[in-house]
Image (tube, rainbow, N blue to C red; front, side, top):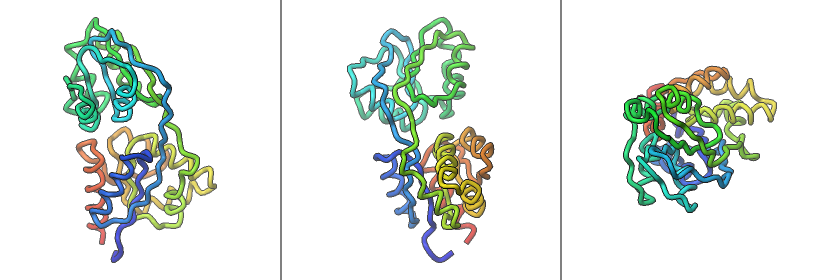
Length: 245
């Protein structure tokens, strides 16, 4: 391979997508920016009587910060980016699980939440693992859906590039980005061709749940980083691509 690797990225069309493109360009790659997620706020607010409040994304932190919400109890964040968003908006973070996942947070709270109220504020596509896990260890759990994640109508350039065999890599940052990629390809009548096109690319998934969902949909994943972090994912995929040269 003599030209710059061409890598598709599917993050929401905001700073996350722009930062992802900048990262790939700094690694001397060509980014195909194809946002597979758009945020639709629900205007719901988290409860304010919980002993533990859990937010699972930077988007969630930004939405509640724009409201009149006043957090109560210990603030918990899944992942470093969510924790950093809390701090950027002036909130302290009390707990971040060692493993950045719903299961990791359940383990973090295992000895702390029996018989107490836990508020979970997140998207409409949150994992049941968190709700069921906290209920199983005795917490009184309430969930607030802060926003819905939908597929933008214009999404799909990456599907067409994959179907033509024009992608060297793809960076799936959630299970939903995988589902929306496949859905966008199906809407264009190129589902099988797009998935086949990824067979010749290096496909990265940010964590095991994302990789498992990709496998369910017929997409073979080559890279799952030990740390569920987008920059780590991107760097490992680029390294794998260059190892193939």
